[in-house]
Amino acid sequence: MLPAHAFQDRKDGIAGYLNARIYIADQATPEEIAAASNVAVRLTFEIQSMDLPIGFPFSAYNNAESSVAIIIGSAALKFAGGSTEPVVSSLDGSRNIIAIPNVADAEQFARNLGSEMEVQDLEDEDKAPLGKSFSLSSLFTTDGLLGDRDGDRIPELLETTIVLGQNVQAVEVIDFAARIAFEATGCRIPFVVTEKVNRLPPNAILIGRYNRFLKAVGYPERLLRALQPGEGRVEVFGTPDGEGSVLEIAGCDKAGESAALSHLRRLCLMRGVTGKTGCTCRQLKRTSGNFFHNDRSPDKRRPRCSKHENSAEVFPANSRHPRAWTFLSKVTATPVCNT
Image (tube, rainbow, N blue to C red):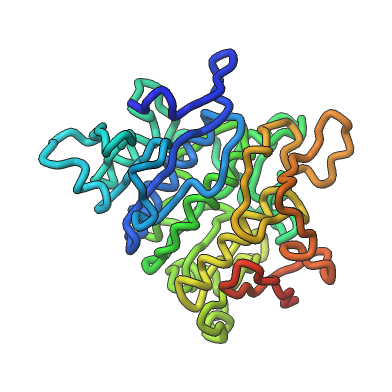
């Protein structure tokens, strides 16, 4: 279904680079964001390196670009025309378009990319361990949101699920989900869901200040009420039984929420490396040592994003195991450690 040039630099049947972008409406619903994020997660499973961002609001669409445009939700209606097909392929000028107006069809596309090969649903996968406790400093390791099934220090599992609240509109969710999924050798769909799910998944990432599960885990609402316009908050919060953790990401408004998501995505690149204007990640090859900051093996080197390095911006030096950060909606925003 995807045009051949969506996956480039193939070697031994494996794509080296993704030449595609995902677009959603500027005022997308949480369901559209979740579906687009799951498509992004599946695409990362097919490649060895990627550029970020890959998720964009439709206002950023340009038919002169050479990348394949995957357009999901209401923004895809103008490209689908009167077609009754769930996935519509077309050309806009010289640009290849994959239009998927229906969210359910987009979720199915995430599972098979239009082929006969599907990844398994959440219920078919090994369940993530309950009661996993972590801090902000261990998020993107096997002590945090990832899992190592066989003890070889290479993460095969995504031991978390992103849960979107009812008012989430930040397109940055797409890149955040893709960046986490890029670190695991396995793939699980759906990786991003909305708060309409029946139960709180293990080790969940809760996005949105009105996420209904925040109340379920006893998160103090006063902390979010204290946020100013343009501010976002990231915090690891213990579950009521004291035997697990959830990651909370919220903003006073869309700008603050976007800022928090953007900085977390950059943190995932590796400890202490970030970009000020958006990080180009083609230098980040999928290797056995993608971000093991405690890995001293010489054959497991960290990837580097050499164009944008600034060790002070994402990882505060004043706290080894930070619990919460507050972000401002500026590209140079510095997280403040609230311990």
